Image 1 (cartoon, rainbow over the protein chains, first blue to last red):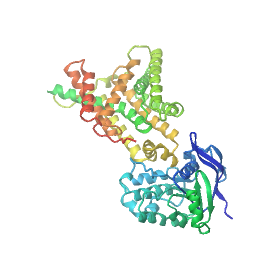
Image 2 (cartoon, one colour):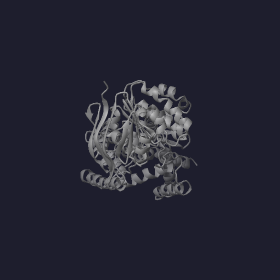
Image 3 (cartoon, rainbow over the protein chains, first blue to last red):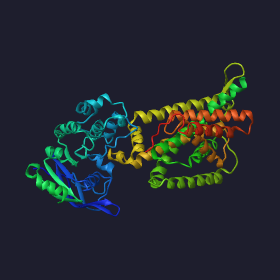
Image 4 (cartoon, each protein chain N blue to C red):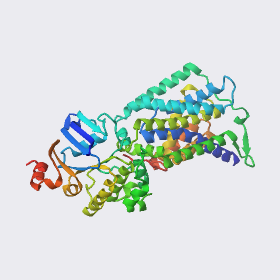
Length: 234
Length: 290
């Protein structure tokens, strides 16, 4: 019997006067992979940023590993094993690839992920380890961003649009690594606009529409029609 | 001829002191993006602190380092953690105003406690000791010690920034504080650590300042100006550039003073303006805009 690693109840969040999320009930179990899809502006990124700490919820609760964490700052959540691969990758421009990866391990959580294992997962990064992260291609930068999050040895990995702006072959390469990542028992939440990849790897999928959960279910039990209706709100 | 060589050597060694002035300022700007207007007054404060530690019991002046450097580092940590951090944010004016006020507070407190008389730290025979380099060329022992300390301190800072976990956190936080916090970096603590390191540099600089020359409570703003000039000449974000900036400023001042005793400071400003005109990014810029 799996239990929720992270759970939100009636979660609301936004920016100033603008409310972006309305009463989100969500959970991800130990070892589970959940995909969140939805159109631009549906609140997916806001949701991840609220879970990871940069944004505070305006209402509702977040429980992670048994603790109420809604008021925790980002650095404390990171130390507790919650890692976010942020939208747009956000590599540190004055750090080399290797130093970016080492920043991921800043909190010093023990676990299977080391520099050697990340280089094993993405061999190209080893070659570029002393380059500045911003000298790399978009796909390679995304590998650094993902590797950096893994270096934290997280229990829960949140990925914000890791396929955004990348060539399909690169997206494929990155998604191919997910089973190896999940094999360590890490729970994963994937936010995607491109639902094809997300539906293939996820155990469960949620579709956000205008800050609300419009649809939820296992990928093989949802029809194309249901998804497109939830996605576009027709 | 040897007179000019002596002048250049003096300027060069004075640059070591200016480099230490500048390194602390560069650090707080580099990591926190905070311009510390009270930086010069903190240097002068450290100088007076050294006098207060050593003078009453006629202790060895070197003892000042053991006491004042850690004390200022601690003070810097606490000031950043509990005061300066509260002013950091989108509004760049708030830390400026706060440190501007702090500058006035430090000057008046020093005036109240130490009076307006000029003071120095007595280093005994070391103050006039020199090594002869043949002919009439000689260098003072104390200025050489100051320069050697400056080089060692900057090398240590460089090592801290490039090779340690804390140094990586400094650079990452400087690049992107929000993303750094996602890695587990507690920004408040990292900023306070950076200010502690900067304050230790300030303490070193302040103690050497009162060993080399006399100070009065209102000398801070001029030291701040030299610090700024050395940082800008060297290029923002580059520690070795800061040393080069300090040396260029020191040499310019020494040459100016040699031509006319009143021209020293002016010549330093002119060298600074020349760099601004022909290479506004400084000689070895490292910092990227964000």
